[in-house]
Length: 119
Image (cartoon, rainbow, N blue to C red):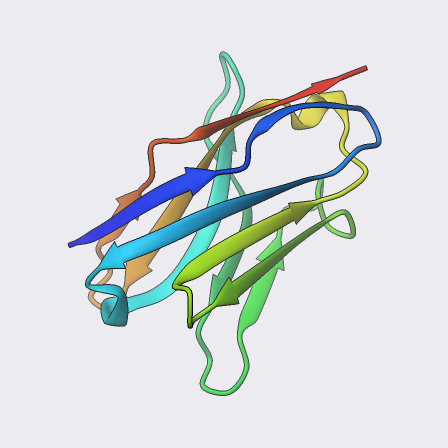
């Protein structure tokens, strides 16, 4: 089992920045990939960014809408994944969920953290 706890959401003006954190606990050695998804009211949950272990190099991928503005990183020592969000736009407003996937392809989710960007 893997437990995920997100933090760092809040209210920010357009053009501002926020950093989300996702702390993992439990069977952290089983985690192969972690990511962030978001869900706006009335919309489906979409992938924002993901990072996968690759030996000495991690592989990151981003949704087109956030590429160049958001950066995902993984601190193994703190078992925490971060999402640095810069140049925020009102359309980035959503609940952001942390996700972890294990080598056996089990998926775990955090409780979500609200990000609101005012215009």
